[in-house]
Every structure is written in structure tokens, then in C-alpha cells.
Image (cartoon, rainbow, N blue to C red; front, side, top):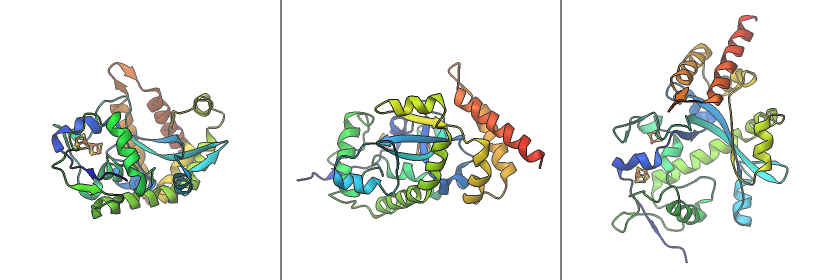
Length: 255
Ligand code: SF4
Ligand code: SF4
């Protein structure tokens, strides 16, 4: 028998869950590229059971024996706090807020019916300090989501991942000869984060309906520079991202 999940977000503790980077999808790129430096992220998912396996097959792709999910990483993983967190509060609201932030602490990588596994694991680890779970909070999951808005965002996010799956698979293979790629594949778990290289920029802007590529490049360049060094450490991924932007600019200037 599954226990109900009682949860209500307590706004003043966002520093627990609003880390340096959040996940976004291709469909969100157009509205968020002016707020975050954006890279590509890939992670492995291990199905819990046959129901979970069937569920992830819709939005993940196979590489060797792994199921891989690809998305966009908005922000800087070296930072402890999201760049949009101001005085412990998120500074973007409504439809601008990333879908992932709307569904936290749940995870779209598990079916709705298995979200109790997600919460049990998160309460043991990353969300240990989260104050949102308590007896006086409303039930928001009871074998299924009881909060309609949460359910809606969850399925929009899932559909976005399904729609971008094949493109992410192609992008992933592009990095096959990189050392970081091989390390990622050799490890049991882990995460591969790579820049949006020049070969993808045109296509991404077109699919994400970003008409002004110049504005995309300018905004991203400025954000990568702003976030380049954190605590005295230079983010080498952002150096690569800046180089990719410069190579793209030089390519289009020759056309
Ligand atoms: S999800 Fe938890 S940690 Fe994050 S703001 Fe809400 S209550 Fe706080
Ligand atoms: S966008 Fe807002 S809700 Fe999302 S991680 Fe950043 S501060 Fe938190």
C-alpha cells in the first residue's frame, strides 16, 4: 500500500533545492536563453521495474546497454545557488519559470504512479532539509497527483522530453570520441555535460523558434562570461561554450 505524500513548498527555503543549475527542455530554450547560460546534459537512467522501463523508453534513447536521457542545463553547476534566486526567492514566475521547477520535488523520469519512490529517495538525500513535507501540508500525491497544476506541468515536461529525444540522441553521438564521453560510459552512474557546439546552434534556434540568432549568441556569450569563474575556479565547460559561439560567429561571417 502506497502512502500519500503531503507537501507544500515553503518559499523561504529555496536555497535547499535551487542549486546552480536546473534542467530545461528545447521548448523552453526560447524563453530562457536570456536568463541562463545553457549547455547540454546527458544522464543514465536505470529502470526500477518493467513499468518504469516501458515509461522511460518514450523519452530516453539506448546507447550500449544504457538508457540515456538528454536535456538542457540552465545555469552553472559550480554555483551553489541558482542565479535567479534573490533573497531566497525565485525571481521569475508563471510561464517563465522552468517546468522542472514547477514539479520539484517530483521527477518526470519516473511514472506518476511511482513518484513515491522518487520522494523516498530524495527525502533521504538532496531534500533532507526540505521543509515542505509535513503532516499539515495538503496531500498532493496519492498513487497519482491530486494537484491538477502539478499534473499538467509534469506531462508537459514529459512530452517535451519525448519530442526532443531523437535530436538529443544525435547530439549525444556527436561527442562519442571525446574523453568525457568515454568516462561517462565507463562509469556506472554519472553525468555528461557538454557545450552547445557550433554545428547545433542553427538547428536549435530554428526548432526553438528563436528568430534572432544574433541575440541568442550575444545573450549566451555575456552569461557564460559572467558565470565563467566561481570561487576562483574557471568553468572549463563554459570556456568551450564560448569558443563554440566564436567559431559559429566566424563560420556565419564567411557565408
Ligand atoms: S521544494 Fe522544499 S526546499 Fe525547495 S523551496 Fe520548496 S519547501 Fe523549500
Ligand atoms: S528558476 Fe527559480 S525555482 Fe528554478 S531553480 Fe532557479 S530560483 Fe529556483
